[in-house]
Image (cartoon, rainbow, N blue to C red; front, side, top):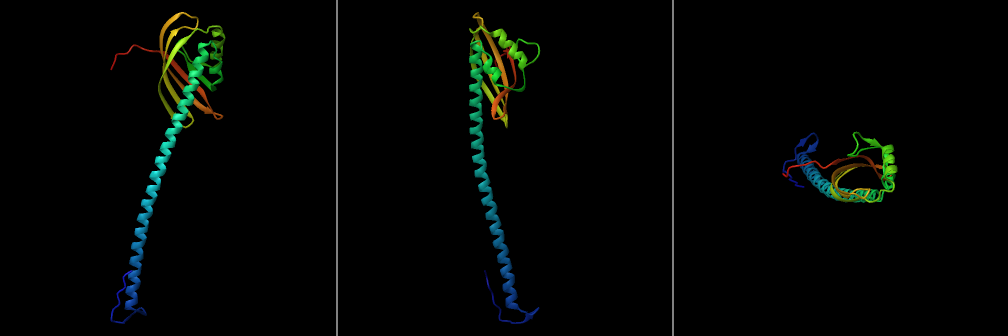
Length: 193
């Protein structure tokens, strides 16, 4: 704080001029101090926000990877069961109001359609296929997984060379990831980019 004392001791509103100047100087210095503190507080808040944002981003990426791995493992389990002629792992993974559209149907089917297929597949345990993960998206309690399959032997044991593209939509239901929707199609002929 800067204090300047004058030689004159006149009165303005019953306050000596030197004291009036000191009060004004105090207020200006106090205002500058407030502005300086406000600037420092803002910078500190921005630094804390940036650190929290970076930590939240890291946590979100870690959570996304954890969910992706969990769902991909479930997908592999579903197809392993299917290769053994057992669709039960798939049926046990279904969410409420499940609906999917397999390539051999003209329209989507619900869980009942999958259960009918499971009955027809009993004893057909010769399927061999290779699965290739393509991509994954996550938004809250909803996830989509994209992959392709190459079937080299059908469930009845006959040779095959079938390529499919698959998407499954998963939802978190009662704390468990479950298949809510899906679609598979024969891989179309494409020109290379």
